[in-house]
Length: 224
Ligand code: TIU
Image (cartoon, rainbow, N blue to C red; front, side):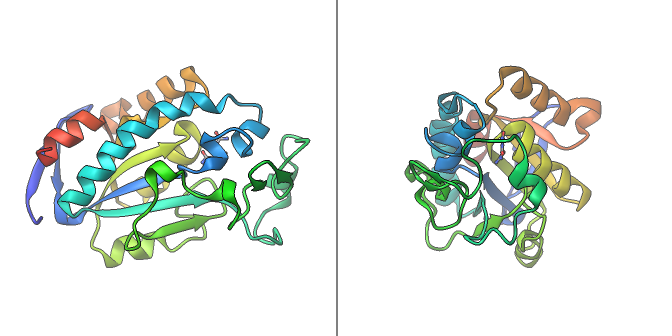
């Protein structure tokens, strides 16, 4: 730690000061990646996101071995739904929506089985979990405080879904002065065209929101 490493990325390679870099794993929850959760209730085939699990596992393992700060997020709500805006609760006219009973417990509710992070990427005890009510990881959370206190300036971003919670978070991070490197094979969308365009949008215009790299390049950078 304390060393500066170069990661190959688009639109150009970027220096990572490892002491000021964190791995951010966004919403790798059963509710999005397993059947019977929020993702499926929205009408999606959740199996398409599962290709992200293996590269995320490799990246998480390497980050832990290097001593990088690791932060997990989960999208979800209080059991009484007082932190969920009516607009979100009503969106989609879903038969089984947020707060309703599903096969993995109440949909997108904290403490339910579906809300938890998939076992393949289970957080360690010393890794903060940010419970967020919105799509962005900064909105009404203490993520910014945790990053500032940890002197973190650069985020290696993984998670789901690319065009929703990943994009919202990367855009929020960018406006707050954090540098984001999104690992393409570690982020996923239910829609192939949104995955492609979501990635394009981040790295266009000289890297308007950040950089795009992948798990192999990240592992090379850490010397794994
Ligand atoms: N629906 C969808 O693509 N995503 C979400 O609702 N939340 C996250 O991206 N985590």
